[in-house]
Length: 323
Ligand code: FES
Image 1 (cartoon, protein in one colour):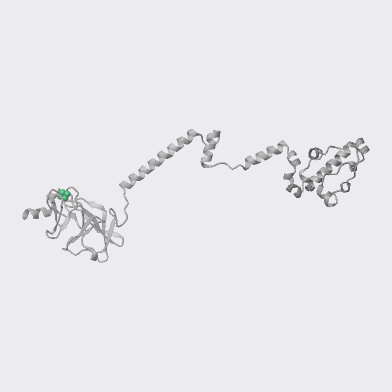
Image 2 (cartoon, helix red, strand yellow):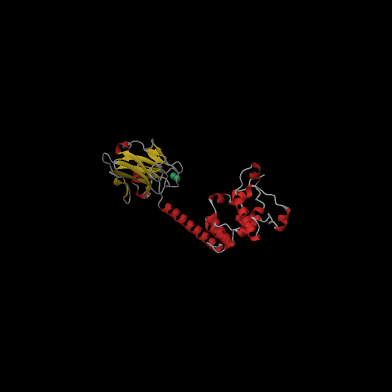
C-alpha cells in the first residue's frame, strides 16, 4: 500500500479527535487513519491510540455511529484550518500534494495572487506594445497616431537624405590620389625636366609639363567637344584626333575648331603644410606657380580647374599666324 504523508496523517488524526469530542465518544473507538506502510512494517503509529487498531464490537458501533471517513479532508479544513504559523518547512514542501491546502484558499488569497501576477507581468515593448495598444486602445498610441508618426519619420528621413545629397553635390569630398582629389608629386626634383615631353596621368586625367614659368597640369579633355587629345612629339604639340584642334605644350590654342585653350588644374607649392604658391587665373592667361624652393612639395589639385582662355587671346595662335 502507498505510504501516507505524515503531515496528512496528523491532520486526519486531529480531525478524528475533534469529531470524537463533538459526538461524545471515546477517541479510541474510532478507526485509525489508514496507513498501510506502518501497519505492514509493524512500525509504531504516530500515537498510542492508532498503534494498536482495536476491533470495535458491533454493540458499541450501534450506540456510537462512527464518522464517515470519506469527508476527512473537508472535515480537516472546516474544523481546524491551518494557519501560516503552523505550517512547517516540511509541510510547505508537501503542500502541493495536499488538496486541503487548495480548498483553504480564500477568494481574497486568489485576488492577492492575481494582483501579484499582474504586478509581475512584464510590460511589452516595441512592436508588441504597439500591437497591444491597437487591441486595447487605452495604452500607448493608437493606430492613427502610429501612422501619423510613421509618416512624419519617413518624411524627416527623406528630407535628411535629400539635404545630405545636396551637400555632397555642392561640397564633394574626394580621397587623395583619385580624380577630383589631390595628387602629391613630391619635391620639385620629381617634376619632368624642362623641354621634355609631357607626362600623362590617366587617373588624374592631366598632362604634366614643366616650363620656365613653372609646372602645369593640363586637363586631358579637348575644349571643343570633349575628346581625349594626344601628345604629338613630332609636331611638339597636342593634337585632337576628333576634329584636329591643336594646342601648344603650355596648353595654348594653336588652331582648329576649339574655341579656347586647354583647361588647367591648380598646382600647389606646399611648404611646412601651407600653400605658398599655386596656379592662378591671371585674366587673359593662366599663370604657373613658378619655381619651387628646395624641400617644397608639388601637389596637383584636380578638384580645382581653371577654364582655358579664349582662342583669340592665345599667344600660340599668334605664332601660327606668323608661320
Ligand atoms: Fe577635339 Fe573636336 S573634340 S577638336
